Length: 150
Image (cartoon, rainbow, N blue to C red; front, top):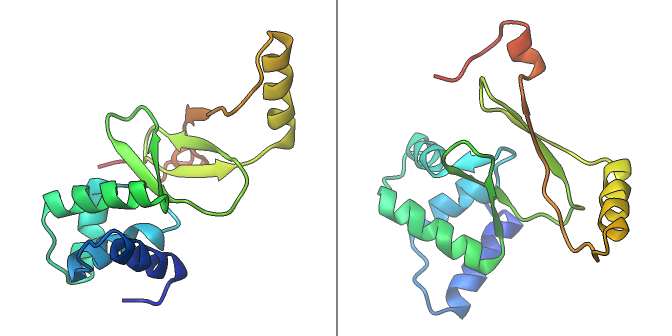
């Protein structure tokens, strides 16, 4: 196990909640909290298995729920029929581009979009609190005949 700060915060959270700190929980947390990708539960299980740990599907889902409750993990729904997860990072609000062929998720931030959502909300009498934008399309690699989802 790495000494990643987010994993250490998860261990502290488990102890504060009087929950067991198990190798299986740590393996799932490591896969999710150190990933640069937006992983599904199935991808987490595969990642953990590649690392040599044996973790059941129920443990993956229970650990995801615990990570969500801790605030260290954020759930994303890109309309694919399953949830994805990303570490909660100290970065500004961001949007997502999702490739409908290979499943790639790319984050982006655009100040013009942030300003526009505030203008739209205020023009209709809303005090904007949050928004979510997911743009579906075909990534550059897939447009060039690259990888496709299997």
